[in-house]
Length: 373
Image 1 (cartoon, rainbow, N blue to C red):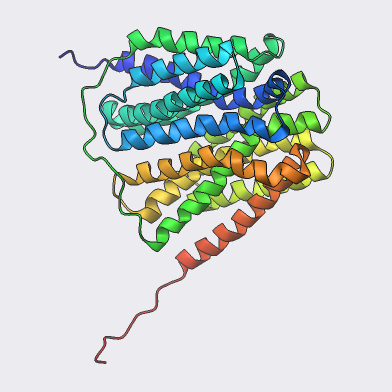
Image 2 (cartoon, rainbow, N blue to C red):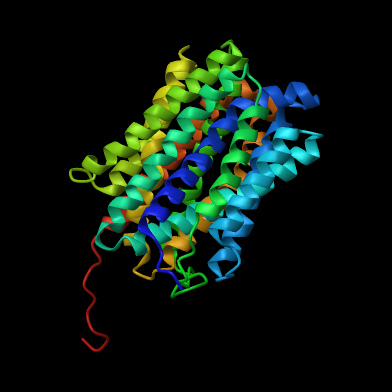
């Protein structure tokens, strides 16, 4: 068997991350167009985000248990099929099926490529993983720009994702390695409750990624201007992610995680004060802090089992799958225009819960006298 080529891994990995990076941003700017096209009620647009999240959750959870046919090539094929189906848009149900396939590809590529970059680049692995995830932001920034160039039509951009995914399949070279550990670790301990905070942070991300442009449009921002603001949101998001490289040298991960929640809560106040566009853009930087900071803190809190990352990923993807449904219920009466206020309240509650958790974990455990003393 031919040894895997680092060059081919780098090219296929980074380009596939550009493609999956485009999806969250593209969903957000496409929802208003789909509501008009398919005569959807305000809350129905969230079904697109849920279909994507369910696809990611199911296939990543299956991959956690070592199914060997769930490879990068399979993931790219899922992206190609899903992108083509959404681009063709024969009906709303077909679009949802396409989003499910896109979610499957999204989740598998994220899991497989992060693992391969860490393992196959040796000592450079951690740095290469950071670079890989930074490239994700390029796709997120580009998608709204391409959407604007297409005149506010999502189909050409989804078609481009389908074509790019199919073209990458021959470039992928299998590693030939099977993960040493599969399955989930034992999560039945009190510290696993911090995964609720991870769920909350991803719920906030889903709200801003998926519903942010729609909320801006409802509050009076022109549709193409909202798409441009989405691109700026992801620029700030990417800068925050890159800034973590230096911030983590000075600030602990749990404090950075808390800063993300507090920042989103303040952005909710800013939106309520009449500056929703500015609040949305600034929230991009706050959101960029949350997941990587939790990953570092959560890894320290939950132990050294290599499967802890799988447990955190499963919790995050569960939030991606259910988040749009939860937000849909919360926004059912107040309307999509109240999104930033609702997310601000949720972020404030999460910040309080995280602060109490940090104080509890920092509290010293008193020495106990022996039973016969």
